[in-house]
Image 1 (spheres, rainbow, N blue to C red):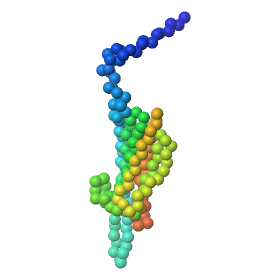
Image 2: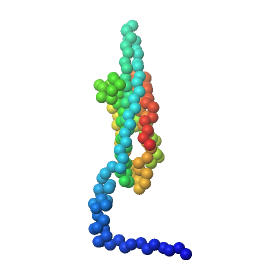
Image 3: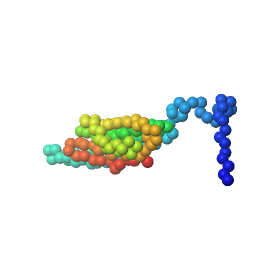
Image 4: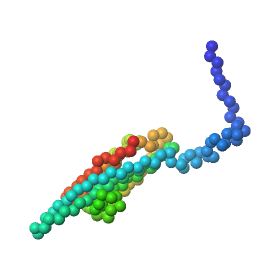
Length: 159
């Protein structure tokens, strides 16, 4: 014979006595991020051109950065890419013909491209709301175009 345990009654007095072990409100839970993850990747290209017998060499770096902030039922995804004249992400920026972001996300089955023409920086952010699984795997691949040459970063992913 199996004995069934009886559930205790949850009374206002029980809740007052237990208040120290619970957040003051559900709003506090919703405000505090559960996880913040970010990654950066870069790639380099050397462009040579000849004008009037003179050879010029230009070295450009493409930086891709993805950040995911997770809350209880939603996530903020931030994607950005920029071009510099040095390997350090804070090196001087360089304006190119176009920067493109290839964005892939599992939580809402997203796969799209975002482009910014005539710039040194391109950014995009997405809010995803879901009762479960808003915070899933995401990847970013950045591409830059300059005078007919393009180069791409390997995908930068957060699991």
